[in-house]
Image 1 (cartoon, rainbow, N blue to C red):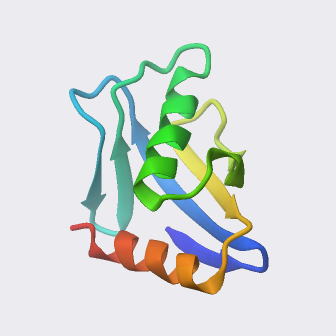
Image 2 (cartoon, rainbow, N blue to C red):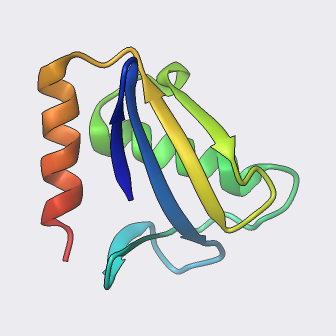
Image 3 (spheres, rainbow, N blue to C red):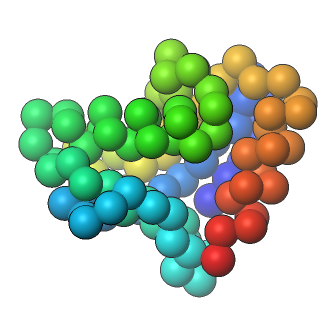
Amino acid sequence: MIKEVENGIIITIKISPNSSKCEFIRNGEELKLKITAPPVDGKANKAVIEFLSKTFKVPKTYFEIIKGETSKEKTILIKNLNTTKVEEIKSFVNSIG
């Protein structure tokens, strides 16, 4: 779900597009993100990055979808993070429940 790497963290999320609101949900060990955007023309991917950027207070340019560009299962690299920000994000993700 979340893994620290040399230049940031990698987070694995299952996306649920066309939802009524944007929110995180934990489903056992799986982290789910509901977003309002449809999965058309990259709109869902853009909405995911925008939501994560606002939630984690990290610039959008720090995010890269490294796996799952056209899938509901996304692996996202958040790069250029300092240790404090990494800990903040890990703490936030662990608090979702």
